[in-house]
Amino acid sequence: MRRFSLDLVSRILELHPTHLVPLSNVLRALVALFLCHLCFGADNYLFTSFRKNGETGVFLALSDDGKKWTPLNDNKPWIAPEHPGMLMRDPFLIKGPDNTWHLLWTWGWNRKDTGGGLKIGHTTSRDLIHWTGQKEIPILPNEPTARNAWAPETVWDAARKEWIIFWSTTIPGRLPGYNHRVYAMTTKDWNTYSPAKVWFNPGFNCIDATLVQDGKRWVMIFKDEREEPVKKNLRLAFAASPAGPWKNVTETFSQAWVEGPSAIKIGQDWWIYFDRYREHHYGAIKTRDWKSFEDVSAQVSFPDDHRHGTVVRISGKEAAALQAIKY
Image 1 (tube, rainbow, N blue to C red):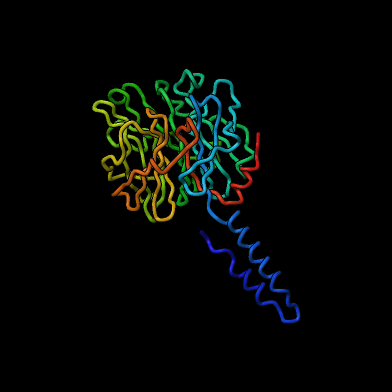
Image 2: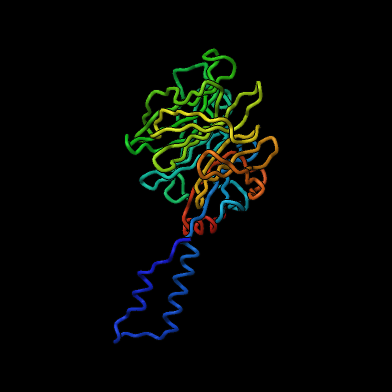
């Protein structure tokens, strides 16, 4: 927990002798400062998710320790779909360098679900409460046989001053079988986009890539999607920049039949959350060095049917504002 402002305390205690105040008033002021710190100074954590097939919208859950997650808005959708037939699966949330929140999601399972052309969804907010209109972003328009665009995420590349948008797609005939690879494109303004290209190819079927920065290196957590023999587990890759190149792919560190990883640092540990979709509940693994891992699934609890989403850090003030909202 952060220390509350010692500067403010000093200013109270060092009042000029001609302006002395009763000690009781000083104590009340200190208590008020401490309570404000408890309410607004400590970190809180926010988790996005979807329910069922994603047709009902985006849900939010809140935690003050990263373990017990409580649904917001009485476990009703925080953001409902605006377009007929659109799903809002795999909602990804991130704050940009200008403090604008960006939300991306999977629009549909395949071309049929997205009206013939592949697309992902995007909206923004300054306060997590008021959101802009839900916008479609075309994906791989020059690849007419591409089947899908799953689990889109984005990361700010500070060196290039642009956003990298990445997701998983399979293109029949490009590689044997279901051959998902992670594709990416860039944008500076969320209106124009570079041509998409294969961004991460570990040599096998992979989906659900997500990134975190740990010191000077970047870590990618992704799902090994191979089914024969069964993998369906999580692995890592590393880079010196969010733009890659991604190297040193590890062996798995999770059980099989998991997906949708999202990670955040809590204290000294990185907590990696994931969807144990066959068991219909969420799990978690923690690590300090990305080499040794401890399954802490027994320590976490999530709302029922919490599905593939994103964990982010928010302030106590932001958390209080969200808790006050009922749609």
